[in-house]
Amino acid sequence: MTIQHLKSGKPEAERAEDDAKVRGIVEATLSDIEKRGDAAVRELSAKFDNYAPQSFRLSSSEIEAAIQKVSARDMEDIRFAQTQIRTFAEAQRASMTDIEVETLPGVILGHRNVPVQSVGCYVPGGKFPMVASAHMSVLTAAVAGVSRIVASAPPVQGAPHPAIVAAMHMGGAHEIYVLGGMQAVGAMALGTETIEPVHMLVGPGNAFVAEAKRQLFGRVGIDLFAGPTETMLIADDTVDAELCATDLLGQAEHGYNSPACLITNSRKLAEATLAEIDRLLQILPTRETASASWRDYGDVYLCDTYDEMLALANDLAYEHVQVMTDRDEWFLDHMQSYGALFLGPRTNVANGDKVIGTNHTLPTKRAGRYTGGLWVGKFLKTHSYQKILTDEAAALVGAYGSRLCLLEGFVGHAEQCNIRVRRYGGINVPYGGAAPYREAAE
Image 1 (cartoon, rainbow, N blue to C red):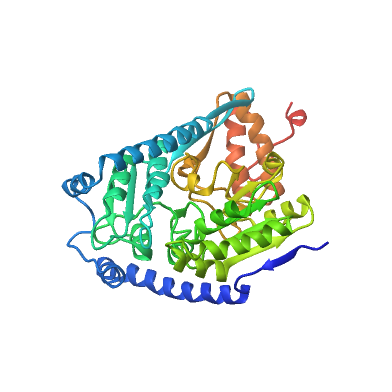
Image 2 (tube, rainbow, N blue to C red):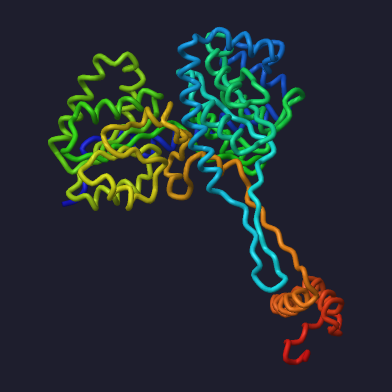
């Protein structure tokens, strides 16, 4: 039996057309920011957010004033979430060790994990104020040891969002800006008269933010391509339609272009889930967004076997993959391309989004085929080093290096090795010639 596509969204050609429009807008916007700096950023903020303060950067007193507006209960919840995220990030950091090894007598090789010097953390806040994104980026960068952490989020109703500011500050941000969208990402990466550019950009965002990061990659580092959220359910008849429909719509409400799909081997579950989605869309307060997303970007696949389900899931490589089957551990052992796995009906994507401790900035648009999500290791660069402690080792390695350089035609390279063979090995190698084999030298 072939895989049946019971419900499909927009054709790929239409999605590609949407992406092309976004690319053009972002390219023009970044060019404008690069040319006109603060003036361009101010115009964009006024246009999109109706917000143009004297300074986009919050002062210490403004940060404290915003924090004072957060209720004690909300502050307690933020602290709890940050404790979970910090605990996991610290465990991840501890798994990354510096090494030093003597590969030959007198030859020392090693590497050190060095934090990025500066990072710009974007926290979305347009349709929904994404408080949790501050934990995921700012706090994780702080655990990694980044020395300059810049955080930016758009205004909400014309002002800094108090809970976002609190989460940024508690997470360890050194600079906090009230600036949204591609103008925030562009300003942090390119720099302006008042914003020093960063070395790396991280954080999720809408299609425009994701495209801006893509276009800026190379000038700065990025965590990954984290565009509109994606959710996949791999389910069999061990779960019911209400659970599946709730989990699909829970992520579809993010935006009008948030893909959500169900992969199942149960026709009964597939059809019941489609009906349950129709029912829930009548009562879900965010149904305007969720229904558009499900209509245009929702898919339901009916497979015959678990192997087919696995192969399809790996091929689609979705951001969030929730597995609710009679063999969840089997999927854990065999899944290869995804952002994060959520195993069993007791957990869900919202736990990962907000509180459980794993990072919610994850690869989208099939980027899970070649990268994982944001984690403490993304803020660390692994740099190698070498040293030679003895004359004997210098002559030995230099002789091999001399001959291998000349094998490729690099005479200048060879002379770097030869001069050391002469000085430390006492062997008179002709200029531009190959160092002799040890037997010939002896």
